[in-house]
Length: 186
Image (cartoon, rainbow, N blue to C red; front, side, top):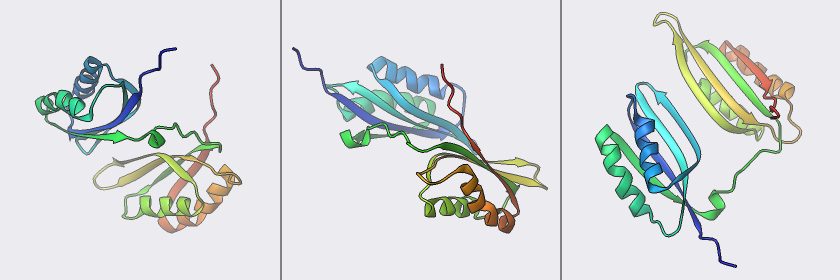
């Protein structure tokens, strides 16, 4: 039996001024190299675009080659590139055994909302799997929106999380909601 070639994994980050075509340019470069995108996240933050991708390739392939091929693509579209080699213990897909919930926080924009909410969750060993913030409303009445996807550890329930955040809700004068994300069966 022929041994299977070793698979290498890299974390690729791309950051720069937002404009159409960034995702197509980067993923086109990865496709041309024969990369598989295992996981990714892309977002626009204050006019800047940021993406992080976990890509895999069969050996032989080097980090230097990946950079050599993607750097011109990034330079052409005005983006910064970062590449980090992932070690085998970093590429294990980490699914949560606990319930997955969405926590939404809405209120008047003020310093400390993200810190105070995430600190409270950390004290309960609640793992944040995704976090997004956005400022909406008007210049006169800005509204801060914080959305978190969390994995609840054993013993935690959506109701207990809501109770945990109740004091912050009053103190920060924000609305906080917690809801279960129900898996969809196909």
